[in-house]
Length: 530
Image (cartoon, rainbow, N blue to C red; front, side, top):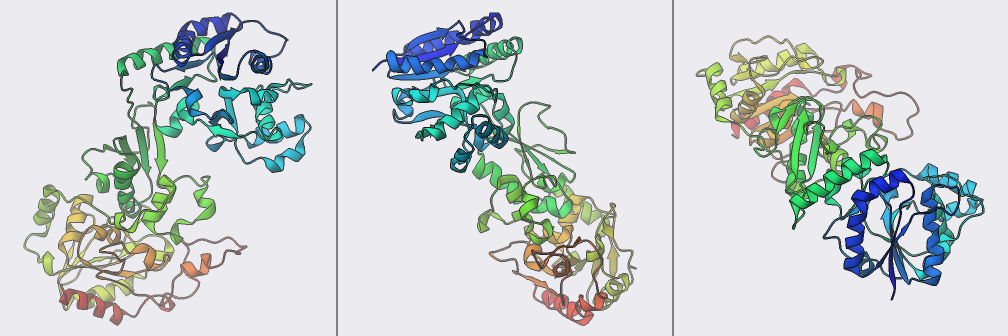
C-alpha cells in the first residue's frame, strides 16, 4: 500500500513559515512510511489552499492513502500514525463544528453550490480541512467544482461534499488538529496537541509561534505533559458562592484532576479551604493573561443556561454545576464544606465574651429582594418572644444592595450585625445550635455544619434553598410558610407578561408568612433537641 503525506508551500511567505514547520513533517513521513510531497506551484489563480484538490489525481493514480497537513501544521515527535487510527473506509478529520459555530457557513455553502436540499441531511458536523486522512475511495470528494466560492476557502465545499457523497467519517479529535482557537476552550496550550495548527496567523507571527512550540516540545520530551489551566469565576452573593463550593471540589477532584485551578469571586472566603487552589477577589484572569479555560458558575444572561433555567427556580449547587460543568453533581458530592480556621473561632470568642453561644438561637433577619425582605415588626416580635425563652444572637452584614434589618436587640439578645468577618460568621453558625433565617447566606453556610435550620422561604422553594446534609435537605431542618411568592411569577411556562421574582408579593405578607407562634415553637423544639 502506497502512502502519501501532502502539504502546500506556495509563495515567499509560505516558504518562510515552512522553514520552521516542514522538518517536523519530513520526520513524521519517514516514521510512518509515507512519501512526502510538497506542492510549490499553483494550477490556477485561486487561493493556494484549493491545491489540496490535487488529491483527486494523486489518489487515483499513485497512492492508496494520504494524510494532508496545512503548511502551518507542526507534528510532535511522538505523534501516532494516523493511518493506523483512521479506518481506511472513513474520511478522517477534526470535527470543529462541535465547539465552533459553523451553521452560517454551511447554510451559505448549500446555497452557493446549488444544493439546498442537502441541508436536511446535515448533522451539525463541520470538519477542519487542515488535517485530513483519506483513501482512494474518497477521491471524488476532491473533484474540482465548476465555480469556487471562498467560504473558509475550500473547507465548506469539502464539508458539503462529505454529505453529497455520503462518506463515512472519523473524528480524529482536537489532539490531532490543535488550533489556537481551541486553547481557551480546553485550557491547554497548542503544545498539548500531537499536531499544532497555527491557523489564522500571518506567516511572521506563525513562524514565531512555531519556533516557540518546538522549543517547548524539546523541553517537554519524552512525556510531553502540559498542565491544564482552569479559571473558575464564581459569581453572585455570599449564598451563591457557598453553594458553588461543591462545584469547585468536584471540578478539581473528578472533572480535571491535576489541573491548575484558580478562582475569582467577590466573596473569596467560602472557597479558601482549598489549600491548592488560589482564590482572588474580582473577575480578572488569574493567570495573568495566559491560556485558561474559563468556567462560570453564574454566566452572563447571553449564556444558553439562562434560556433553559432560572436561578430562583433551581437548587443553588445545581445551578452552579450546570452553568460551569454542564451537569448536576451526584447527591453524595453536593454537601458543602467550609473551613473554620482557629483565627475565626478566636474572633468570635473575643467579641462574644462569655455569651452562651452553644445554647443560643442565631437569627438573621435578612434585607434583600423585596420578595425576600419580611416586615421588620414581624421579625421583631419573633426575636423578642424567643429571647424570653433562650439567648438570641443577631448576625448579618449591610453590604448594598443586601443587608440585615434594623431590628432592636433587646434583653437576652447579643447583636453581632456588621461585627464579624465572613470566616467568623461561619464560626458563629457552627457554634449556635439553631439558625432562624430567610433565604440568605447563613442558611447556605449551615450546610457545612450540624446545627438545626428554621427557614422562612418566599421567592424560592425550600427544597431548592435548604442545603443537602446527611442525604436530605430536611435533615434537622424545617421550612415554614403559607405560600411562596415565586409561584406568582414563574408558575407557568406560557407566561406572556414581564415577571420578576424579586418584586413584592401581590397580596399582604400575612398570606405568605407563617404564624409567629409556629416559628417560635419550631425554634424552641429544635433547641430542646440539641
